[in-house]
Image (cartoon, rainbow, N blue to C red; front, side):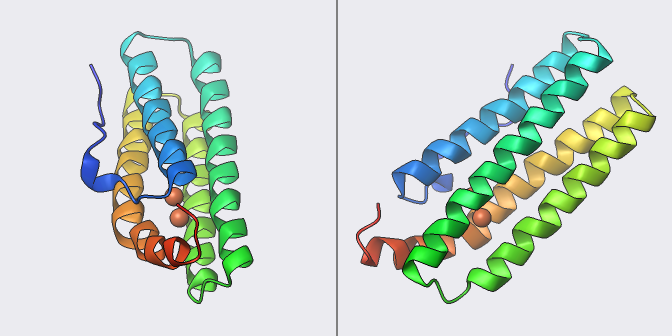
Length: 136
Ligand SMILES: [Fe+2]
Ligand SMILES: [Fe+2]
């Protein structure tokens, strides 16, 4: 069963970005499913590492689109990304020192919440700017 369901209102209309977002959702779902399936801590731990790497790559992709098109809000958006990476890294550290289901669920809950909030509030804001410049 999926923890986070993709919904159409999360589509921003820029194909490469939407594909990344869908992938992020499926990674978080996979993490949740792995926990339910009782996967061992090292397996979960390694998966969190790859999830963080993928998230960073996604953020870099957005940020280079901002640079290419001189998106006016790029600094604030980048700061939001940096803060999110710092929070995920912190949550991962907590999981490393206490590999409990509670800790993992807290992390999954955080990932779920920020993805939805950040896409709805911040990513949606830059979509018209990119589309006006022929990126869709
Ligand atoms: Fe995004
Ligand atoms: Fe973003």
